Length: 286
Image 1: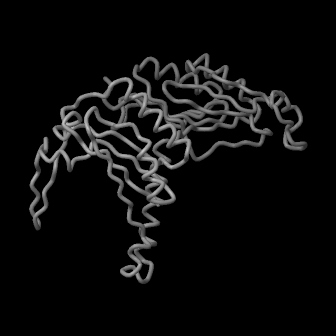
Image 2 (image 1 turned 180 degrees about the vertical axis):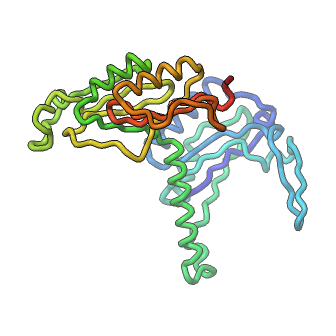
Image 3 (image 1 turned 90 degrees about the vertical axis):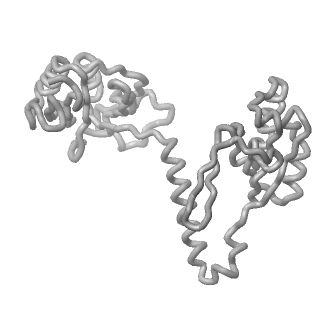
């Protein structure tokens, strides 16, 4: 069962009094025990109500009130969300908690509703399905918000050549680089084309504030289509220099020129088959 464990506010918490180092250490140790036990889903402290608001509803009207609020014993200074087997388990954990305040304080435990509690209302299971869909959406949004998205380029045997070229002409910085011959596990037989044994299995390089991942792939059959790397620069002479370097041995598909969205914009496919958009930001000087 999921429960919310609420630390009730006190005069000191409403005054914004910070906990001592000893209390911080004790609470940190308690939280670690909760994490190690696998019951803690989240937990945070709340700033005093002097920094908060309330909205009172009356029919269609909405009245906004700014804190502080007087009913200290009804206010919350912090909370946890735990997933426990029973209310008895939650009580046992709360009894182990250090006093979270410098004065006498209260911690309240309240169970969450689950959809089973609404079985008499949700006779068809429709609301349960909607709730489950929303939970999955929220979980996905939360996971994606913490995710990292990078481009991964395959150079069909020319990765190291491309890295050297981008380093020289674009100022790329190469991070880690592993060749197939460096793999701690043997490459499955028949995966690599002949001559690829010492090619780049995986590498990382950065352009500006963006990390790009790259590899030679397992053979020379890679083709590039359907995407471009958009590189925004902040000086016209740099844009011309980079564009010319990328065009060397490649193909200009749209010459650098002024557009309605950029003072300077062009498209080019470099000699490694990578398509680029080179541009100045919209607010850059002409």
